[in-house]
Length: 222
Image (cartoon, rainbow, N blue to C red):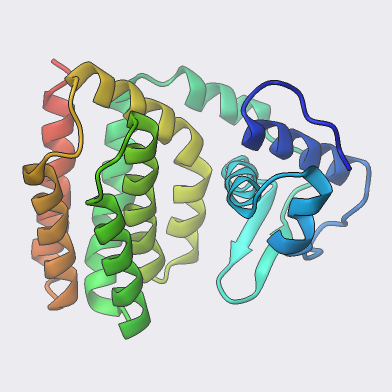
């Protein structure tokens, strides 16, 4: 079993997985073992493995193929791009979210399946639960927006979203702390309206609601 240090577990697992990929344990294009197999190797839960995989997907090392599993897409991480993301200010992060998520909402309204709608509704319901910390709220928010991106059925947008998640998560935590409040009924209502537009198959409304919401976040930085 791998011994982990005293720092965020998902970060440690991501580093350890990357090292094993660098050492040739898995070849380019090879499928990784499942979460239930990897979790005992690191002595962590499946959610930690899942977050570590998301981090490495965000760095271009892993690719998640819906219904197929997780595959090695690169044998090392692109540190230059990570440095660009890490140095981006919150406004730039919100603008990038607009580019990815507005189009995803429009496509989801056109392409969502019944299974996609069930997934989005579960994610929205979880987002609406009382959260004890900013981090929990942001994670549930990301999960909701991820469910929309998945419903768009565009692998490029899905990969961009996952690549961007670590920096987006950090920026959203900073933004929520600047606002000193989170999880309001009004905020949850906006997300419910986005889902409703997707549900009834209205791509224009879904995109407009998403854009307005994210632009409102941006204006609150001023």
